[in-house]
Length: 257
Image (cartoon, rainbow, N blue to C red; front, side):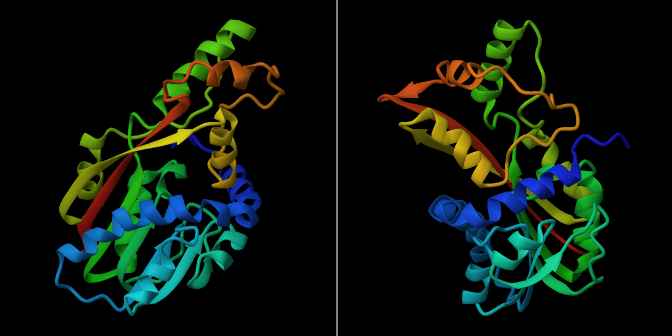
């Protein structure tokens, strides 16, 4: 399979983000609660959980619900800050212990893996029979205005374009991905979230501080014109003088057999 993402770059981005992630805690916690609310829809009691890439927003909430939690991340620094027992993921082969957990929560962390179906299969294998996967990831439409603005500004300034925002899956494909990975009762729905920024550059800073900067293998690795990002951000939609960044967060649930 052709590698879309630079795994080492994703790790470096998350390492650099780890010391700065605390200032994003209110946003990350709000997004996490939107996902964890799905736990209230089941009467199943969970005791052993895996927080996969939760950046400090998942493990504490699961521990408050009485669970023992391991926190896995491809960044050792991020895993150490996540709130559970740290577990380092060193490659796209996760090497998770089979049938260890009755709950796996992968919150906004799977979209940097080239083999998304393979990642879901590995998480299913880490679940005990009748265990639950609860996952979230950006769906198509996320940061679409930023993607378009960057492409148009770069073409205008340089005469060419390079990818700067990751590809995201269609919401309609997400339940199918769970089914392909062997989950039963797969469900995918979406949370539509708007974030408003009075300072347009703060959007880029938040993406950096969340470890979400460009890690596409096809990205341009040379310096870009200084005018690129101001020009692109100036084209973003606004409301009451603030730019709008849209997140379409797909929330996936599936049960291990």
